[in-house]
Amino acid sequence: MSAGLHELFVFVLAIFVGFEVISKVPVVLHTPLMSGSNAIHGIVVVGGILVLGHAHGPLETVLGALAVAFGAMNLAGGFLVTDRMLEMFKPRRPGAPRDK
Amino acid sequence: MNLEPVLPYAYLAATVLFVLGLRSLSAPATARSGNLLAAAGMALAVGATIATPGLQHMDLIVLALVIGCVAGALGARTVQMTAMPEMVAMLNGLGGGAAALVSAVEFLRGGPDVPVHGIAGVIALAQSFGSPRTAGHPAGVGTTLGLLIGSISFSGSIVAFGKLHGWVHERALATRMLRVVNGVLIAAVLVAALVVARWGGTAWFATLAAGALLFGVTMVLPIGGADMPVVISLLNSCTGLAAAETGFVLGNDALIIAGTLVGASGTLLTQLMCRAMNRSLASVVMGGFGAHAPAPAHGAGGKPVVAEHPVREIGAEDAAILMSNAREVIIIPGYGMAVAQAQHAVRELADLLTQKGVEVKYAIHPVAGRMPGHMNVLLAEANVPYDQLYDLDAINDEFPRADVALVIGANDVVNPAARTDAASPIYGMPILNADKAQHVIVIKRSLNPGFAGIDNPIYYEPRTMMLFGDAKSAVANVIIAMKDGGG
Image (cartoon, chains in turn purple, green):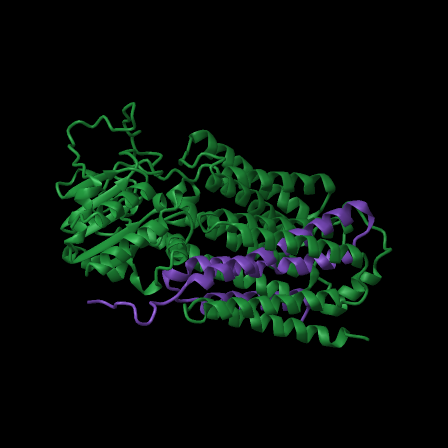
């Protein structure tokens, strides 16, 4: 299988996984899910590291370093903010008055 | 130590963690551990990438990583829960910007687009270092799309941030001019993309970047505040796709998979939002929620000039008495609650009512607020247990049995015109049937229509009473009245 074709297979299969994995989300979790997936696209930092690692000349180096910094902010901020939100989601405390 | 043979397995483990994490994120009980799983996967992927042989500028890589992580962590720690939509928009823009930058560096290097493959490809790239670069090198599909989508996502998210932050006006605007501009821009960007992908050329590349950045601005600028949940979700999935494109360029499967997962799940979430508003994505993006509705008539003091509609006002004391004697009260929060940061006061009111034996439920419209699930986050911050929150489908049949529907800073999501008035711009949007309750108390600053600019007949219903004031102080006044024995 040629290289480009391999990536295409991975891409198409990942689309299906992405759809399947979150087929049913309660509204309660829309924000954390979005902000969690927001953090996952911080994976772009990997691309940033690879291009910076092979950068050549000042322009490429500066742009590459910016890409790494942006990506790192995206992922660190994303995961922490999602955790902060999810920490607050609690079911009804046991012992609290239920429906009367 | 040579880590090279292990690296693909590290990426594999990371992608498995992403999938498991995303799945756990979609159920309340496992969501938090899901986020941690995904974070662990990310640490693994970043670690494996740093360990890739042949990388130069390692000091700079580490420095940029540290600066980025510290800045991101500081932002995440300090941001207020009410500013969460802005925060998500900003982080999303950064991700999109990173994807665009990666594509730009890749183009500048004139590296091959697809032939690099996996770790071996990265090493081949490293070895091909000194090879002469040609300015006219075709960028290829991956680099072009990465730049295009990443740039749109970057500038679009920044504009969304500005709107949510109040720097840019939130009202929907759809002028014919803007449509023409957008049409021309799309055409120009597509031509530039084609040229860049097929033939390359630095000038064309710069044109594409500038055009895509500009299009991100003109695309998001006219979209009204009420449509923000859809836009945020859409931009999120765009950044995912842009990241996936850079994965094509670099031949990195982990990048492709993680980016695509976000792209696909984000698309699904965007569709959910659109369905909740009964509108197509195209109609949201083309802008002008309410832009075709006649301009609402305003009086000087914000009161409407519509004299034929009498409005009943209610004071805090009477509202306290009415609710204290109710059997069931359904609270409908909206963006006004977020703006006034009234969630803690609302919860205090609900606790007081519960103590008096009143059953309190919260009805959450899927597109209430400025991002998906906005209200849920705010109420969770105020320690409202999530099983007191009800989706539209779960609660709508209950309104006729409720004694009081308390609308706090919500407008369009309770607008009965969506059911009855075929001429209304929101006709067909599923709404919360607040108007079916025995009494409706609406807390609102004035009779100004919401950001959608659509008047709301619920205010003029005989069973509706208006409690004017900002959400926080109005609720606080009701609490004081209730504690003073009002009821």
